Length: 115
Length: 114
Image (cartoon, rainbow over all chains, first blue to last red; front, side):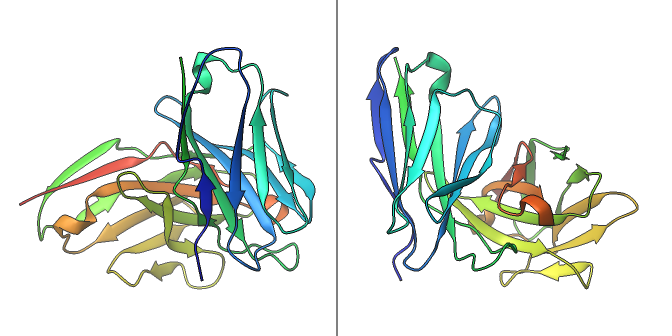
């Protein structure tokens, strides 16, 4: 099976712009989670989607949003970019058939640089 | 709220030496515990996990971790490290109520010297 793929791998934007990142989960996986990784704050949970619904949300401002499509692919959007949004954005998928825990498989990430 | 503290930001060791990466957590509810490894320019890979049962869990590449509830710890150990173990290691916690939401520690960079 192919792993979790994220596009693009690298992105450079300027302050005030918006950006959309894409994540394709492993085939058959229904849950997709997003994390932000920065040197200062480490790895922080953004949100989780399951069956096109946001099921969990971290403590990020409303500028950060996401969605999931019927094929489980997910996108996250950041509007009005700030310098502090520069980070590695990681997507993780898991099979999840019930509410129980399943292993999360991480993609390679999208490195976003905001100038 | 849950939190994870990795006590060492960097750990340098010589090849074939033993290593312990420390992890302490804080939670008011029952927990699931994980160790993830991140190689340069890659995403995270699950190394091992504790969900329930035996408090000693092992990975296929020689790492092990022990869940100690009284000390709220989940330290990662390996008796003999290799150059290829050079990476950043993250301890994480979640709970049955919000299972897919992982709370990570700040990471420990393990450097293996020949």
